[in-house]
Figure (spheres, rainbow, N blue to C red):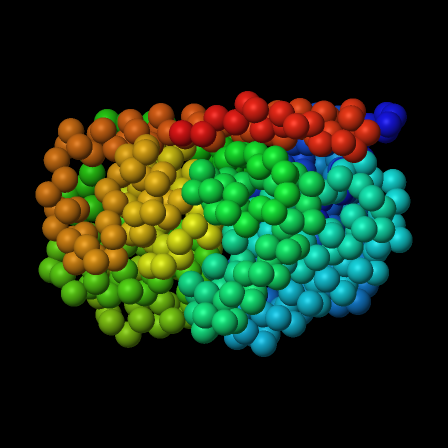
Length: 423
């Protein structure tokens, strides 16, 4: 049985200062667990996301080690694809992180528990290798079902290849002792591929502390009507999974009044940026990713926060940026499949208008026809739903589950998921 502070190793690809792709959330979890008395080490890549470029100038063979908010951070080199939607480059990307992390395998002797975050299967593969070597409990947190997301994004084509990648993903997943994920739909998907008796915990994402602080400084939007020319905001990663260009083109075909601000980066950001420039439509404005202060102000100023999710993405992911929109009191304008995690969230919480991709041409008229009472109802629902994603409550649950595992000398309590609160 461990004595003193429980030692936790977190394996993830993105970490502060990377905010996209869950980086802000993963960082905040590590900080929150360190605040609660765990001795936390994070092994991650040098910052690169969502710009897909080396932002530190240090990416390579060297390993950087430093302290950040009480967390021991170890940064490893990774191959950064110049074409993120290339299957060959994505395979090199995954393999390079596994090989780079593999150099640290002899440094894993003292950890009581290892937590690995997926979307990168390379991260999961390293964590499984660490489990085999040290026989320590492994907790898998699934933020993104990589095989499904790769197929939805057009990276993987063909049923045979998708099936093969799904099988590899499932095999690695089933090496972990505990699973957790961020939506009921994704948990159902995990239950279908589970071959053992691993508990699957529902751990929703939350708004990280610094962004929550920025929004808290701004006055409430509740009751503020939408502008006569509705203001829309998209902010975050722009990749194949978002299919944002298709949404823009549908809006542009209409004569509706609106102002759509887009701030983002990622594999498909260049296409959207160039389209905005060439179409010459003053209703669209494209800008770089915002810092937290600018992001909070943009959320405060907007009438609708736009989230798009490519048709056919299924249960692969739930955009965590939705939570910032909810906390700001901004109605969410979502375009996605009804059965996706985002679609379920929209139907359960009703924080704004939802559209399928088949209904895309109805978006402009819906913006013009929304009455004041409906708009206020969306604002109220957004704020009410934001309480479900309370930071302190969720991180407390992570810490409590980890304490129980460590106290059981690595055994996994059978009732670990008993207090899950699924909507």
